[in-house]
Image 1 (cartoon, rainbow, N blue to C red):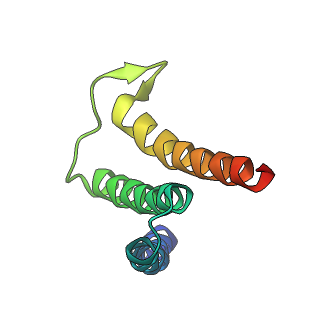
Image 2: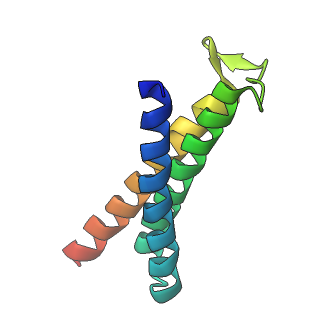
Length: 97
C-alpha cells in the first residue's frame, strides 16, 4: 500500500468522525456561530472527498480556472475557511457585548 493511499484513508476516517460529531453538534446547537463552525468542518470533509475522487479519476478537474487554479478546487479550499472566519468573528462580536 502506498503511503499516499494510507494517508487518504487516515484523513477519510478522521474527517468522517469529525463530520459525524459536527452533525450531532448541529442538531443540539442552533446558534449561528456554531452552525458556521459545523459547516466549515463539513465543507472540509467534502473537499477531502472531492480531492480523492479527482485523484481516482472519478471526477475531472474543471476546465474553468482563475489564475491557473480550477474554480471548483478553489471553492473547496476557500469555503471552509470562510465558514470558520465567519464563526469566529461572530463569537468575538458576541463576547464583547
